[in-house]
Length: 110
Length: 113
Image (tube, rainbow over all chains, first blue to last red; front, side, top):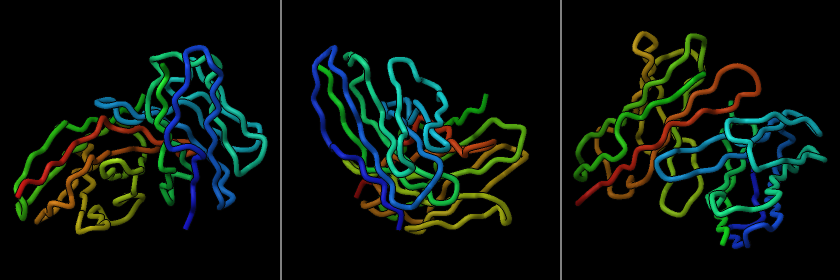
């Protein structure tokens, strides 16, 4: 089974901090994704990557950046965290055939 | 742009009753369709998916969905629900390159004894 692992289950950060959310997959998938989940809005795509060092903006990229230096790792970066980025963040890999998501990181920005 | 509409934000139902969760999508090209479930305080789990072939798709936990191209719908059904089916259900569509998914807002299914 594919495993998508997110390094933190819960995070609390202060406004203005730089925040890194890490995601690792173990199946050599090329495509990886970052979503945020908010009540009543479902999941919205922030960024995705289709290869090492390659990235594309999703529907809500503002305030975020990403890094993919190795195939198995895809990082989401909040350059300067703000309270409106308090949310659940979900990472996924290779959605078409397997639909594997990580268990999520609940980020609170205070 | 593609979109997914889940017509009900909440569906209350009694145990052992049938349930249908509705999903409509907007796309003029071939699509892949998915239903995910999220139990309280857990991640997303794939229930079923339609990629091609038979329009009736069977998934885990006794759920099934029917792809209707003319009505651009992909409704999820279960003939008899259990308390343990209480969860949030998300419909999603994928098309084009990279297989990114567009999600609906979710339907919260509450099964009562």
